[in-house]
Amino acid sequence: MNHGQTLEVDANTPYALDEAGLFGYDFVSITGEGCPEVLGGAAVLNEGESLTCTITNDDIAPKLTVIKRVVNNSTGTKAAGDFTIFVTGDILPDLSFPGDENGTTVTIDAGPYAVGEVLVAGYTVSYSADCIGVIGVGEEKTCTVTNNDQDVLGEDTEDGEVLGATPQTGISLINLLFAALAFEVGLYLRRRTKLLKLIN
Ligand SMILES: [Ca+2]
Ligand SMILES: [Ca+2]
Image (cartoon, rainbow, N blue to C red; front, side, top):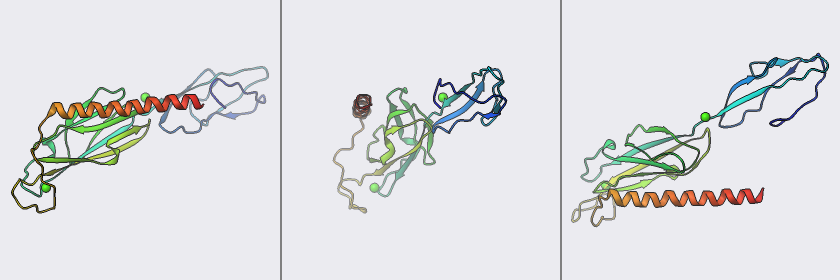
């Protein structure tokens, strides 16, 4: 049965009250006089009696883990903590924290999100697939941000990397790119939501 529905039952017969698990939601309580207090608990009604029970669920905040990898196979000396990670989304205020090889887990709002970082001179950056996307209640995703130290110009490349021209340091540049990216994701989702509403 659905929300607000009334069901006719036989008198003096125990009926168990339960709900099918809804992904991303925790069971909180059943309230109402004469109602069982736990899922699966039974209620018995006399003739002519009626019973109203309220089941409360709570949405589970999505979790995002950001793993920071730094590859120093040229002459780089930076560690994970020398990089600053950003997480941005449709609703949540932007989060910012230092990188960690063991991963940093944050709870975020359901919806679109994107992970970025402040560019560090002399390092290239690459993001795994789940560093941008949409996350639902109860979901857990992992994003890996990998930095590789750039070979110094004029030196032999040991790992076939493309030599970077001038390494960028621009906090403002990355923020701009990042904001544009997050905006695009948000825009896409709002369009999709509208479309779904039209279809249904
Ligand atoms: Ca909640
Ligand atoms: Ca390298």
